[in-house]
Amino acid sequence: MAQVAVRDVSKAFGAVKVLHGVNVDIPDGAFVVLVGPSGCGKSTLLRMVAGLESITGGTISIGDRVVNHLPPARRDIAMVFQNYALYPHKTVAQNMAFALKLRKTDPAVITERVKKAAEILDLTPYLSRYPRQLSGGQRQRVAMGRAIVRDPQVFLFDEPLSNLDAKLRVQMRTEIKELHQRLKTTTIYVTHDQVEAMTMADRIVVMQAGRIEQIGAPLELFDRPANTFVAGFIGSPA
Ligand code: ADP
Ligand code: MG
Image 1: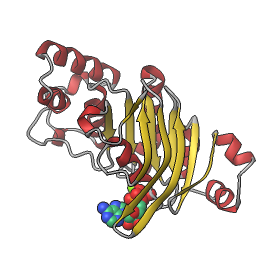
Image 2: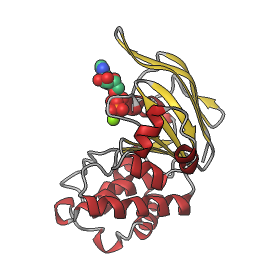
Image 3: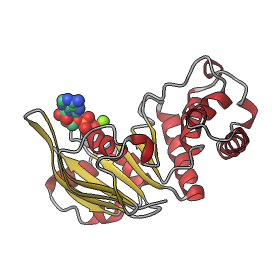
């Protein structure tokens, strides 16, 4: 586990500025949700933490290391996306083991980690199945399993539930929170869904147009929104 610190971070794609000096602290072990309308810069910020996007200005640290110039593989993070492409010709166990194999992890360690992740995610009976033989929820759990086996310092989620139907989405919220309570891994979770943010976050970061409007606990934002944007966004029906 590690704390993540985002200091005065800006991002431009060519001449277009999409993040304007963003500051946010993600405490060690916290579950922090970045929320805001589509296009406000959530994914860009998350991808910068992951090392998938260069940093135009400012610094990002994970633990006590400034990671601005570290490649993704050296940041000790694991990311779960909305489009969790599983390898169709690999079994559940092979899907979960793949990233560790690439990193030349000891096979005995891989077996142990896959076994443990499967137990945590209720996937033990499905380890030798292929993705097409799984339900949507089970596939989503395999995607999380691929992240868990890496035993990272930080989990990054980018709208992981957007492709699921409403009922499953609500169920998976609970599962992801239970997972966090169990592993206590520092988590940054991106969504455009304010209900998801309110129900899952220890702390919410509300973004709009490349800026942070407010940071606070869910009830704090509800009781004392900093401005009309936050009040409208948090208070509007899902
Ligand atoms: P969100 O995840 O909040 O929906 P994004 O971070 O994906 O928003 O995008 C923020 C802004 O940056 C948007 O205006 C988007 O069009 C722009 N953007 C994102 N990626 C690129 C890119 N690779 N090239 C140019 N513009 C981009
Ligand atoms: Mg996005």
